[in-house]
Image (spheres, helix red, strand yellow):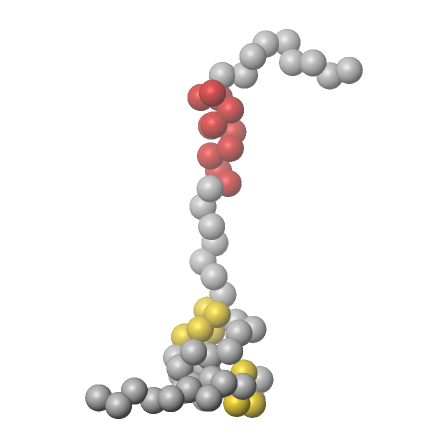
Length: 63
């Protein structure tokens, strides 16, 4: 059975785990309909289109 010879200190343990904390930049794409940036494979929040079809009806703000 595998048993460690000595205790691994908190500093050594945390040093080993430190390279995993940073997340990659999410895949942002431009919407072909309106040109707004959004996450890929998701409905555009600006215009409500996905895959060449209108999925959501987005009301435009009246200023």
